[in-house]
Length: 48
Length: 469
Image 1: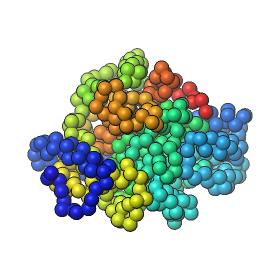
Image 2: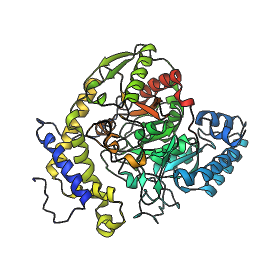
Image 3: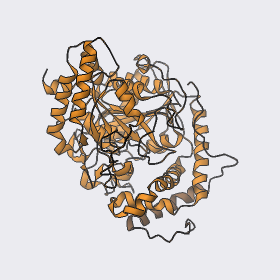
Image 4: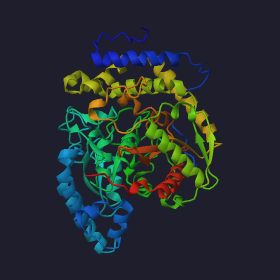
């Protein structure tokens, strides 16, 4: 699993299940071509 | 008026009656407190009832009104989620870890309610630390659904939705990071609005995830939500995420007319795998909107297949970052489900967090383009009605998803993009459980969201039904 940060903390069974689910979902995210898109800013103040 | 008659009024009705001195704030507050004290043991809607504070505020409002002074929420009893700091009053965030926490200052929304003359009757129950959608709370009890007490009220603002639906106050303030206002609003048959990111200050709210947290109003009608939003919205120097955008008079938007308005319908994903009663109710609601003169147009929302991954990779590490010291000191005091959701936050990669934030940016831009073609987007709020408390972990109707997991399926997208979204009732199941539709708009255009919601609501009139409590 490539999501380890190097932490040696043990996960509870609930935590391990949630992490497994996130890892599976994250594979879809990694397949996305983001081009040069920067991280999301907060909205600029503007009238609708 | 009897207690039952008084507490059945809408917020707008009771505010008008107080202003015209037909009823007094003390009379209304006493009626709400009596009902709350009688029902709260069974409903588990409030963690703390602030009876003395409420009566003091009601007496103050009564004196001011007698002297001719008027405020928008003068003397109107409301509740607030126990996530918002209240000076000198315990603020638990639904957690054992914070059981004895007494803030020294108010959250901005609390100050704004006080400035508007509201009477705060208490602090509502929630999913522990707002990290869950059921309000099955191991420390403060499970909030019941007023329409069927064997079922959940939803969450995380479940106590607020239950209180409003059951007549324990005329409105409430909730928070929403993945659907926590709209989910319980839908399950309890009330209106709940997640405003635009930055529209309402989050200062003094115990954070879950800074990038996705929103604060907003919950009430029985769209008009009531509009009144509450006007009272709590606007820039706040204490909140760096708050935006300097003027707050309109939302009541002026409630014209009843939506003729010619363009409504986007994202059939893909958002209309798939619905329970039959929900599918029928939402289809009927779309026909009502068409009858009112709206044009329905099929659209596709961007990056839907990855949006859950985006939410998880932002929410998990941000939540863990806040909770790290508390988990290190007191992990055993957390409920097993919330601890399990928090722990993965320390295991995820920073590059995936940035990837999620970049995808979020892309989704926002593409959604803004969509809103050049439509004024609002309409979806079901939730694919099912309120599940039984004992059935939360069961798969429903053959879909590989538990009932609990399905609750945030359609709501979290609008937390990621930060656009405003409301849930309002759109019918009932054959078992008599409420069903909701979600109406989303463009940034800082809550007025159009409220206008469309109000026009539908006044035509359909589901809000006139009351739960059997």
